Image (cartoon, rainbow, N blue to C red; front, side):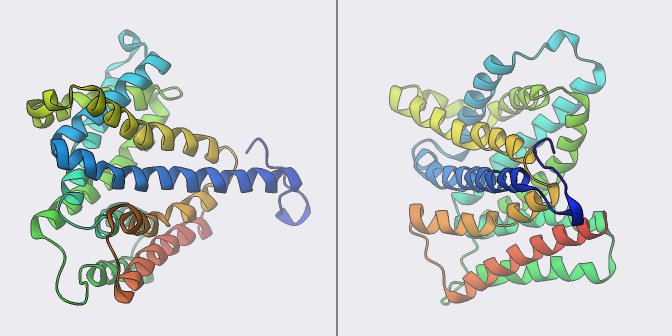
Length: 296
């Protein structure tokens, strides 16, 4: 990293430590933006439905980023267009499933189930054996999260949508890595968001006219900034200031932040067993990340 200087013993110098600290703060800000943005989406979902909220948020995000990046569409190769189409379609499906899930089940449970997707991708990359303990721990955590002490809180349709979001997130990670190699800067993200907005149109266009007022458009623009524009920008800066290992472990906190956002914004309380379930999902993700770094 540009601002991390290695000294004797493999430790970072003072400027490197400062860069790492600022990177940690940026990561926490990014994750908070994603989780609280998701929680604040509940108002828009109640007013316009999950599909329309997804569509308009993607349209706003795609428009803002396209104005900033101005991707040279005519110059892209067939491989680049294929990458943008597959990534954008995956982003649309993932977001549609995610918003449909949080419309039916608590945000903390949605995040825990969705996290199984990237966790499976990471575990697969490390191989089997003893590492399978991490997906098992995460699964147990999800089961604990699904019971509030009185009964099961996981509406079957909501759980199914959350699983779809998890598959989408795992696929997104694989496709995003390829897109990053094919495009310069944020061009790949910009093109993918445009495709995602088009892919989500058939699902959200029908009720889009209901949000064509200052309040509705302002709400959608705010959601677009919270997720994904603001977090992606913060994460890009953070990755320049800290090792990938520290970044990966920090991102493991997302399910816990999702549960916190659900509690503070949506008044979704958690029992001690549900807190334990969240901790197991976080520990499983951190364990997989640490395992991957130790073998890098």
